[in-house]
Length: 231
Image (cartoon, rainbow, N blue to C red; front, side, top):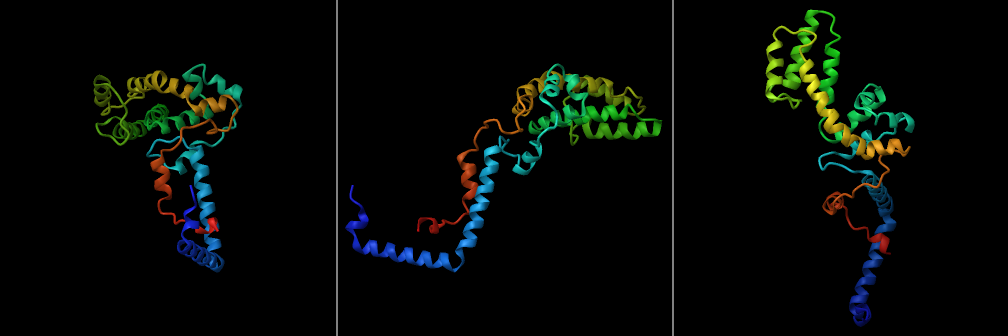
């Protein structure tokens, strides 16, 4: 197929004129802006290559979730022996909490930890204050961090809030513990977050699914064409 520019001298002349104009603009100050845009695009692409995100999770949060752990692969492997071994260690608890955040179910571990703290209360006034706070945050209907409890367990817990004891939340805490052990924990063991640690890889380096084309388009739709790279 013949080059249309060769067949149309008039068009060829216009293209050359456009090239001269663009070169002139580039010399007058477009270069610094071009470099800034190029660096900005490079930074964005670097983050995109790392991200395996829920559509509503922003990149800054993902970066925080993928910080490297100082635990050895041998220690991490022990977390796979039982759920109790995982959450009984601070590092294991922290990694598991990060995982739950990616599934938007961190309220479960937060409730469990609140119950553990509650049982350490030293007097009745402290017990009552914490009991009310836990109930309103995690158990009350439409609470800000309502956990998934069956009707009977929720009713039993609600009735004892008026006269709390150190065992007020035992039934509810066990329900949530079992839920995490049987549901979230197996998925955690299959997650890239855990497998990367077991294999001694920096977290997030596993081949991850790509972002959709629509996302990439939205990220760069406001960018102006950089004619300078054609000249």
